[in-house]
Image (cartoon, rainbow, N blue to C red; front, side, top):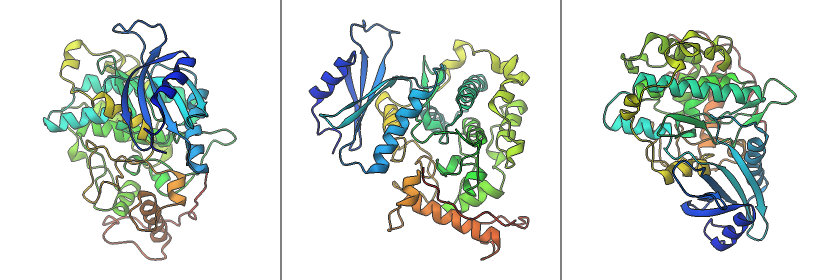
Length: 404
């Protein structure tokens, strides 16, 4: 069922019955549609609350697709409110239309991926005070998530939304988050390859530290305007993440050693060397130093805009796998349907990858299996993928394709 095949009036009526009025449509795709809505009776003046109504058609979805839609609702509903998280407002099934409606807070100023893309376009570094303030808010949001027993698993610049003139951060897209209930470790491998931690690449058990690795990738991207690992193939990317250091020559020298030090530790290959969000927030840089206070207005004037409103909101709608956003940085080997730098891998895509070789989930699973075979010594290291001088590889665990 296409997103536009149901009656808009039916949706307007359904939203109205829950206390919302549709202000304007923002985006429609084959998968879903999004509307800007307000609470009924609210006066549309600057500063009044706006929300996004995400409309997810359920007709025709298989069990995995329906479960994925309900998973996002379940995670959003269960998280206590926090100023640095996209806020869940309401959700309900509209049986007549065959859709699920999710009402969430609206971040009107784009996302960090858009900011990076626009900074790249003018070859201008982002101001460090803004990066520090954003990083502090991302840390606060993650600290709250982790304290709720939730690991995000798909942090990336296109999931970090901006509002209040780009000064305020909200983490969004919880479609593949996982609640760690009975164990401190999870095993299902999902996420976006360019932001995946070494333990995810190796298909090992993981915990909240995968989010800290992804945050390190985001911090590197904000300071270098490039991702920390750039590869010629997906297999090469897997090897780089597992065995190589980021290319620190890309790091803009105008940024402080303090910020670089935090980023280095978040990108530690060893999980034990990776700090928690709470630990970083307690450091002087963020507890009482330059990262503890918002920058002056003059700083924000030099920060590029994020994406336009409709494209930003499509991230909320499509963030779990379409991977078609033009401003996302491409690897040399990426195509429109193969985007390790932005397309998310889910357990469904790993289990049901297309046989034609064009599916990111299939290619990632093959690359990860090759890594494990090479590390176990069955085939020997690939000379084109493994860095020269790499230490002898210890035996890796068996490949697991644990379905959620």
